[in-house]
Length: 182
Image (cartoon, rainbow, N blue to C red):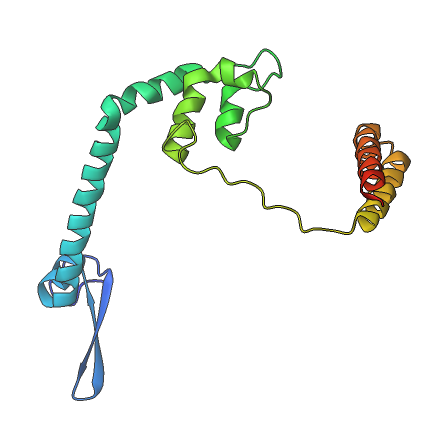
């Protein structure tokens, strides 16, 4: 469809004007729409300003901290890096942001620290450590019953490590109950 104003360019914008209660449609090219519609002129200026601000933002990001370009170069060079312990390659880490083992931190080193810094703003804990709230006081007998039930379940599921921990906790609780008994 040809622009109804200039009769030259392809019409890409439809403007509807309401005059005396009746709508009138005009099919216009982008340039004619800018001339005839104050809304489109304002919109074009805003888009241009947004593009400029995005461009400036990208420039700032690339030059922030003295060398984002070097960071990208390092990451490209590290693409072939593989953790010798678990076999995780760097590209798999970048896709998931999850390491495979403790040795991945040594294998990928500064690249992981850089990601942590980007996500959290620091590589060390800053601020208050939140302690776990104390468990509500529970009747020792009820707690003992729950622990014994859990112990039986662990043995049935062959979770012997957890069973050993529970066994020791049960013994400790039974001793405490004996000491407190009159």
